[in-house]
Image (spheres, helix red, strand yellow):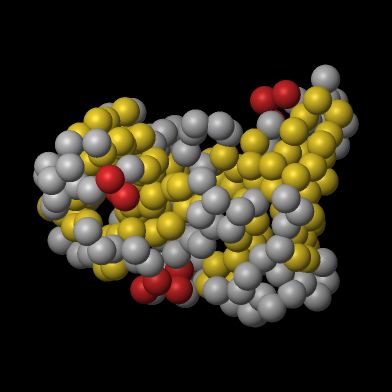
Length: 117
Length: 114
């Protein structure tokens, strides 16, 4: 089974702290993604990466950065946490089918519920 | 990406088939239809996807109309564990750039009742 593991299930941080959310996948997937999920707003894409050291902004990148130094690991960084970043954070990975580029389905981690106080 | 329209909620009796509709009337020729579900407090789970032919796997069946403007996800024998929010998503075939990303709407909350 493909596994996407997020380092923490629950996290409480103080305003202004630098926060690292880690995500590791074990199936050699090229593509990795970070979403946040908020009630009434659904899932929103923060950043994604199609290869090592590659990153692209999603729909809501402000206040976040990412790092992908190794293929299996994609880190989300909150440079200076704020209360409006309290949310459920979901990491996902996928494989790109080489022939038609449609991509296999995404596999999601269980999520990290971050509370910034 | 094309937008999708799904009912906000549906009920289904345990053991019966659950048929979840999705409208995607502006879908483009190179866009696939994907279905995911999210059980409470978990990450979304991939169910199935298709382009124009009907698809079946161990979890569900996907029926896509001939004009591709709508589709139906079928859970043949719903159980209580199928209670979840079901998302219908269309996504471009070309994986390059943000066109390939999944955009989740609000989905359909399916409640399977005993």
